[in-house]
Amino acid sequence: MTRAVVFVPWRPQPSRVPQFERLIAWYAAEVPELEVRTVDTDDVPFNLAACRNRAFEGLDDTDVVVLNDADTLPERGPLLDAVGAAASDRFVHLPYTEYRWLGATGSRQYGDGTPLASCDFELVKGACSGVYVSSARTWRDHGGQDERFRGWGYEDAAWFVAHSTLLESPPVRHEGKVFALHHVAEVRAGAHFDANAALMERYRDASTSIEAMRALIAEPARAVRDLVEPAV
Image 1 (spheres, rainbow, N blue to C red):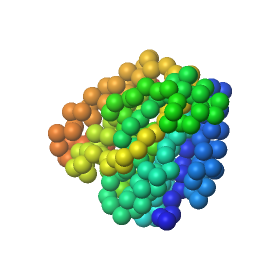
Image 2: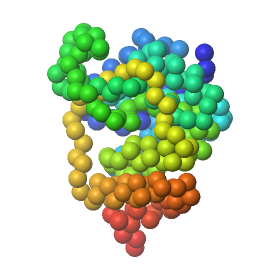
Image 3: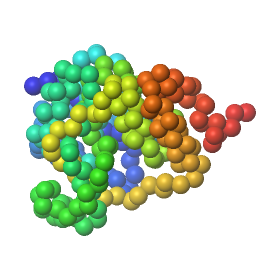
């Protein structure tokens, strides 16, 4: 089996602890051969993109990382297929073609012992978050995720556009499902969210060429942070 490590971006919040504990229990039961670690940064607010990038620091190019959100459960087969494939090509892999949001009802059913595949859910079309599998080389080759996205919103969509532009192909999907567990929703409003939305629009504009995308990614992180934190 290809060597891989699972990194979970994680900063404890009361409503998220039960989901995190279920994720750790799932890996221990279903994929015990993979080591699971948590990753965080000093950013305030929580910076999911920065956490994901930190997971690859110090790794060899061929090392494979599973980036697994703290509330999302994959399936063993598609996950291991993605790990094996990511070690030998130049793309990020998504171990699912179907993203199921279980919501409060489905999450409660799972907590009561109902198998994941039988829990109530809503299908999230076009989802590109939750679980990523990548070699360190691939993550670096397309710039990883943009740490200018602060708080919550758009970092996944921007990354998907960057990957599709710079590597000239979208991430590779493996037939399967992931299951997102319910927690208190984050506030998606305010100065940080508006700055994220503006940066996302620039990613859409830059998707017309590799050169434009590389220029956007190469900008200093401060350029967008000044939108909500003026320099003094």
